[in-house]
Image 1 (tube, rainbow, N blue to C red):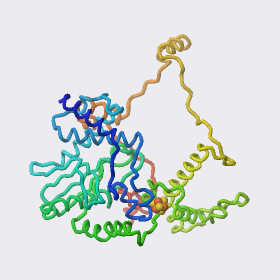
Image 2 (image 1 turned 30 degrees about the vertical axis):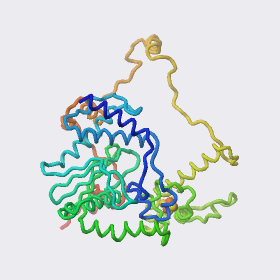
Image 3 (image 1 turned 180 degrees about the vertical axis):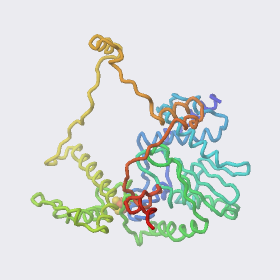
Image 4 (image 1 turned 45 degrees about the vertical axis):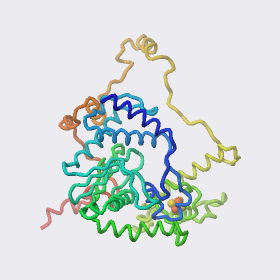
Length: 409
Ligand code: SF4
């Protein structure tokens, strides 16, 4: 099996070095171009680059290899280097969990698709990580290896496009499927369940395609009825986030400031007193905070790029960031010196038990099921937190009246 893995690794590295091509309407960017049809022209052909995206590609590649080679044990290639990335304990753990998840939906009679090219027409399509058709149920599974941005499964347009592509691919699938399950598996995002599922009926999916997806593509292609839509989920990955007038005016309106006040150095900007805002005003501002933060990030990036490019911008300069101090001699030599001073070697080191998550990763890398640790783990309740009512977590009682409701007659 190792031989097979090494052959796969060679192929993967060759493919990885090639430039990938993308459909004009990419499912992964669909949340943006479906809602803000104006954004399409500014983001066309753009694809994610950088270390995180490459790490994600490797996780997908390994997942595919494991799903196609059932007897392969991922922990046997721990610390192997593929395309300059080390297959570390994290990757073994998360990819193995993804593979187990996909396998858990596969039955004898299932029709399975792995890393399958899916198109709804010549312009719109991409690669679907995994699909499983069992009877009338179609499961569409997407591995999200990023940890920074939470990806919601609810009405996820990327997964809906893949599901439509599956229905269009074969009249038989279209005939038998009744329920569609959209799965997101995002193991590295902290604080949420890694596996999330959203169920949608075939009728609702087709209705969405007819009323939302296809009209958006038609408008973009014809250049007619184009519209802007600015909200955090839509604008997050937009290339023109820092210069988009629509987004700027929405954010300034949110802060209740006129643009001319904002750029006038002699003007003191007065933000509204929060105690005096109504519930509706507070909610509106709260809804817009993520978008506002993301926009300020784009402003910082743009200004940094201009100063880096040599522009003289009064009031700003580039400095080196702070870093923590570090020892500058080898550990062995340092320990000798410290022991001399502190008299005991134990004084030179801190010893700490590893976290449940780290222990689970190590157990997994050894080839055991992480569940054997469950009986030693408990999850304490966190402090109360304000979240959107769309959040799936169970709301807690927040008033004494609710707490003592049972004591009422
Ligand atoms: S920043 Fe937002 S509103 Fe502006 S074009 Fe991009 S997606 Fe549309």
